[in-house]
Length: 125
Image 1 (tube, one colour):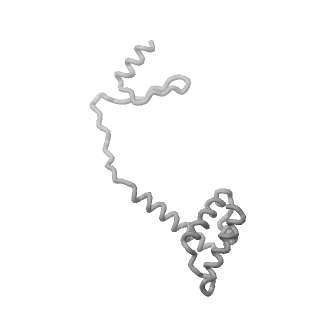
Image 2: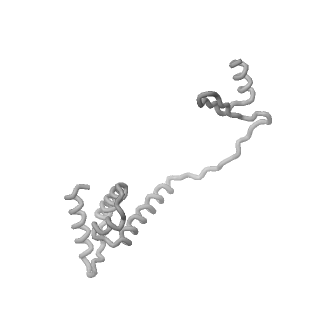
Image 3: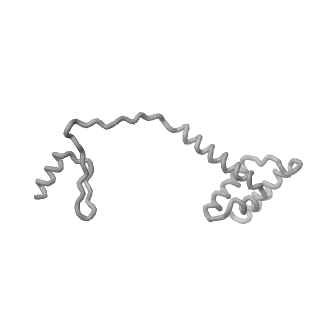
C-alpha cells in the first residue's frame, strides 16, 4: 500500500472511531476490509500485529478480532463448498497383489501386478 493510501486509511479509521464518545465508533466494512488487506500484506513482510495495530490507530484486540472473523468467514465459505464422500476399501482378487518396482537412477514403476513384474523381468533379461 502506498503511503498516501495508508494515510487515507488511517484517517478513515480515526474518523469512524471518533464518531462516538470514547473512540469506539463502528468502522465501515469497506474500510475494515482495506485495513485487513494491508495487515495481511505487511505481516507477510514480517511486521508485527502490535506495530500494525498502532500504525492504524487500532487496539490490538480489535485488529485480532477483525482477522479472526475474516478467517472464520473464509473457512465457512470453503466448508459450504465441500461435499460428503464415502471411502471404501479397495477390493482385489486373491493373488492380485499390486507392487512397486524400483530401478536404477530413481526409476519407479507403481501399481504393477505380479504378472506385470514377471513380464518386465522377462523383457529385461
